[in-house]
Image (cartoon, rainbow, N blue to C red):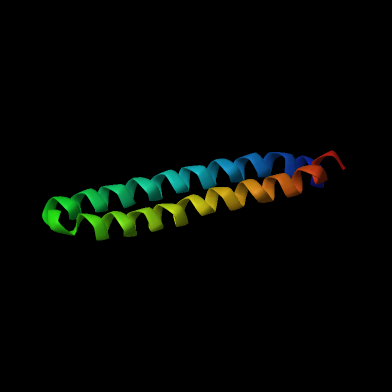
Length: 78
């Protein structure tokens, strides 16, 4: 298998894995935040702020993978 063919298969696969991981991480973050708000409604503001920061970090994984995809895309054509 040629390097370019392997890269053409691996790059979209990596984007998919990153998106699935990000989705799972976001789901768990929101689930934990909603459970915490249900237990302590008075801490809504602090919990929401922490959840938004965590969600941003989860999304960063997918954004980094997308940036690497666009950087490596020119290597596919060879």
